[in-house]
Image 1 (cartoon, rainbow, N blue to C red):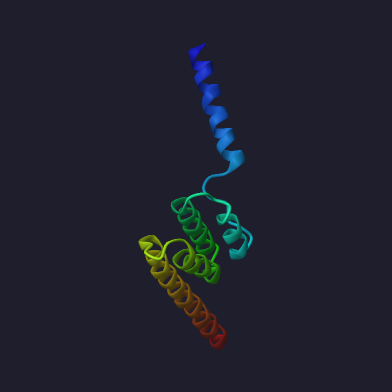
Image 2: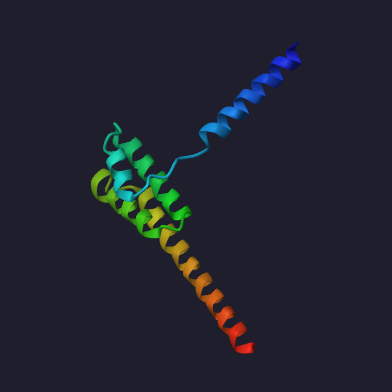
Amino acid sequence: MKKFVTIMMVFCLSAGIALTGCGTRKAATSKDAIKISQTIEGKDKQEEYLLDQAQAFVDAEDFKGGLNLTRYTLTAVNRDSKGAREMIRKIHNTRNEYIKQERGQKKQETKKGIQK
Protein backbone atom coordinates (compact mmCIF):
# COMPACT_ATOMS: atom_id res chain seq x y z
CA MET A 1 0.00 0.00 0.00
CA LYS A 2 2.79 2.43 0.88
CA LYS A 3 4.49 1.62 -2.39
CA PHE A 4 1.32 2.45 -4.33
CA VAL A 5 0.88 5.77 -2.52
CA THR A 6 4.53 6.69 -3.14
CA ILE A 7 4.23 5.84 -6.83
CA MET A 8 1.03 7.90 -7.13
CA MET A 9 2.68 10.87 -5.40
CA VAL A 10 5.65 10.74 -7.78
CA PHE A 11 3.31 10.44 -10.75
CA CYS A 12 1.19 13.42 -9.63
CA LEU A 13 4.26 15.55 -8.99
CA SER A 14 5.73 14.65 -12.39
CA ALA A 15 2.45 15.35 -14.15
CA GLY A 16 2.16 18.72 -12.38
CA ILE A 17 5.63 19.75 -13.45
CA ALA A 18 5.04 18.59 -17.01
CA LEU A 19 1.74 20.46 -17.29
CA THR A 20 2.89 23.73 -15.79
CA GLY A 21 6.36 23.70 -17.28
CA CYS A 22 9.65 24.53 -15.64
CA GLY A 23 11.20 27.96 -15.33
CA THR A 24 9.93 31.37 -16.26
CA ARG A 25 7.67 31.70 -19.28
CA LYS A 26 8.94 34.32 -21.69
CA ALA A 27 6.70 37.30 -22.28
CA ALA A 28 5.76 37.96 -25.91
CA THR A 29 7.77 41.20 -26.05
CA SER A 30 10.09 43.13 -23.79
CA LYS A 31 7.37 45.79 -23.45
CA ASP A 32 4.98 43.13 -22.17
CA ALA A 33 7.57 41.97 -19.64
CA ILE A 34 8.04 45.54 -18.43
CA LYS A 35 4.27 45.99 -18.01
CA ILE A 36 4.04 42.76 -16.04
CA SER A 37 7.00 43.78 -13.87
CA GLN A 38 5.23 47.00 -12.96
CA THR A 39 2.47 44.97 -11.30
CA ILE A 40 4.96 43.12 -9.07
CA GLU A 41 5.38 44.49 -5.56
CA GLY A 42 8.92 45.00 -4.31
CA LYS A 43 11.90 46.20 -6.27
CA ASP A 44 13.85 43.00 -5.57
CA LYS A 45 11.11 40.83 -7.06
CA GLN A 46 10.75 43.17 -10.05
CA GLU A 47 14.49 42.98 -10.66
CA GLU A 48 14.49 39.19 -10.39
CA TYR A 49 11.55 38.89 -12.79
CA LEU A 50 13.10 41.25 -15.35
CA LEU A 51 16.47 39.50 -15.28
CA ASP A 52 14.77 36.09 -15.63
CA GLN A 53 12.87 37.46 -18.60
CA ALA A 54 16.06 38.93 -20.08
CA GLN A 55 17.66 35.48 -19.85
CA ALA A 56 14.62 33.91 -21.53
CA PHE A 57 14.91 36.40 -24.39
CA VAL A 58 18.62 35.64 -24.78
CA ASP A 59 17.91 31.91 -24.75
CA ALA A 60 15.48 32.56 -27.62
CA GLU A 61 18.26 34.52 -29.43
CA ASP A 62 16.37 37.81 -28.99
CA PHE A 63 19.37 39.80 -27.79
CA LYS A 64 17.72 43.19 -28.30
CA GLY A 65 14.80 42.20 -26.05
CA GLY A 66 17.21 40.97 -23.40
CA LEU A 67 19.17 44.22 -23.51
CA ASN A 68 15.98 46.30 -23.35
CA LEU A 69 14.89 44.53 -20.18
CA THR A 70 18.30 44.75 -18.59
CA ARG A 71 18.63 48.45 -19.35
CA TYR A 72 15.13 49.07 -17.98
CA THR A 73 16.15 47.24 -14.81
CA LEU A 74 19.13 49.58 -14.41
CA THR A 75 17.22 52.77 -15.16
CA ALA A 76 13.86 52.18 -13.47
CA VAL A 77 14.29 49.45 -10.85
CA ASN A 78 17.81 49.33 -9.43
CA ARG A 79 20.61 51.54 -10.67
CA ASP A 80 23.20 49.56 -8.75
CA SER A 81 22.10 46.09 -9.87
CA LYS A 82 25.16 43.88 -10.19
CA GLY A 83 22.98 41.20 -11.74
CA ALA A 84 21.85 43.55 -14.51
CA ARG A 85 25.41 44.66 -15.23
CA GLU A 86 26.55 41.04 -15.41
CA MET A 87 23.59 40.23 -17.66
CA ILE A 88 24.59 43.00 -20.09
CA ARG A 89 28.10 41.54 -20.32
CA LYS A 90 26.66 38.07 -20.78
CA ILE A 91 24.29 39.23 -23.52
CA HIS A 92 27.09 40.97 -25.43
CA ASN A 93 29.35 37.91 -25.15
CA THR A 94 26.57 35.53 -26.19
CA ARG A 95 25.58 37.75 -29.11
CA ASN A 96 29.19 38.01 -30.29
CA GLU A 97 29.58 34.21 -30.16
CA TYR A 98 26.33 33.82 -32.08
CA ILE A 99 27.54 36.23 -34.76
CA LYS A 100 30.87 34.39 -35.06
CA GLN A 101 29.05 31.08 -35.52
CA GLU A 102 26.77 32.58 -38.16
CA ARG A 103 29.75 33.98 -40.07
CA GLY A 104 31.54 30.64 -39.84
CA GLN A 105 28.53 28.83 -41.26
CA LYS A 106 28.24 31.32 -44.12
CA LYS A 107 31.94 30.87 -44.95
CA GLN A 108 31.53 27.09 -45.03
CA GLU A 109 28.49 27.39 -47.28
CA THR A 110 30.40 29.71 -49.59
CA LYS A 111 33.35 27.30 -49.77
CA LYS A 112 31.00 24.41 -50.56
CA GLY A 113 29.39 26.49 -53.31
CA ILE A 114 32.79 27.29 -54.87
CA GLN A 115 33.94 23.65 -54.74
CA LYS A 116 30.90 22.45 -56.72
